[in-house]
Image (cartoon, rainbow, N blue to C red; front, side, top):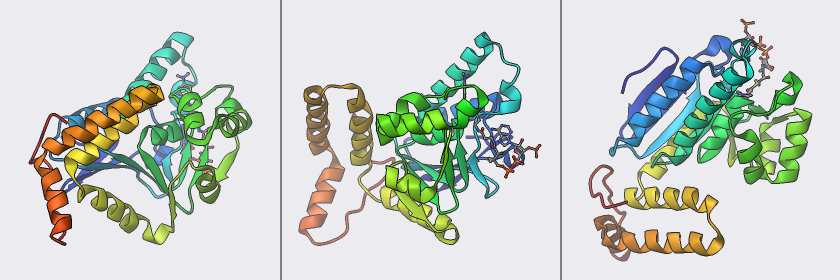
Amino acid sequence: MTNSEHVRMQRDGAVMTVTIDRPKALNALNAAVLDALHAVFTDIQNDRELAVVVLTGAGGKAFVAGADIAEMVDLTPEGAHAFALKGHAVCALISRVGIPVIAAVDGFALGGGLELALACDFIVASDKSRFGQPETKLGLIPGFGGCVRLPRRIGKAAAAQWIYSSDIIDANTALRMGLVTEVISSEQFSSRVNAIAQAIASRGPCAVRAAKRVLVESEDLDMISACALEAKAFSSLFATPEMREGTTAFLAKREPVFCWGGSRTAL
Ligand code: DAK
């Protein structure tokens, strides 16, 4: 995997940190950043040695302050549609990549930045973070899935009020709304994010992948089909060495040892 001008990767064992690195524009998403993210997550999708991805922004001020307004200002409706499709493709790829993706938000996550974070499995935030979909203030609506993913995360009424008003909220409000799972002090942010990622990386790899697949695929299914999908994924884990290791370790009162990239099954 190669670093690009505005997207950096750093690997620590089975954990990959992907950093959007355009701090002068508060990491705003232009076409080049979206293309780079697409390439990076395509590589991640094919990497069986990875357990978890942390997606974050450089500079200490923003995760991503939105789609690049300077690049958007002169778009025609056709150009805007192509730009929206590019953003949707990146968000779809991130949401469906086979392993968990954590959005680590340390600063502003606005507009397209919040939509990118919503495509991740969950969002953890530093206490200085701010969130918003301020597009109506620009005469726009969210263009990378915000009108779709935000109501599913926090409920339709809260999403509607927030999108219509363009209000910006702080991290603790985001926690109360269920947008973020954890608010962390700025001083402890990187170590806590790393601990969350390492904890996931220490669990059964087939199990984590299977859980993600059921969580993602069941979103578009009715309850009966979703539970059938879960039952199938659950039972298929009984064919994996890691299930033997996990259950045997419990009964032997020791910690299980799993190997990412090792015992692979059809999952
Ligand atoms: N795009 C481009 N540059 C940005 C930017 C952005 N979204 N946000 C910040 N910057 C740039 C600023 O212009 C400034 O550049 P210089 O002037 O230094 O060259 C630099 O980053 C630092 O920003 P500030 O000087 O403004 O910093 P402050 O601390 O004073 O303010 C701020 C921070 C985050 C409150 C402020 O920068 C701000 O309000 N930024 C814009 C936030 C915003 O409105 N974001 C939503 C963008 S709209 C669609 C597809 C996608 C979307 C919609 C439609 N279709 C294709 C239909 C999505 C839309 C959006 O995301």
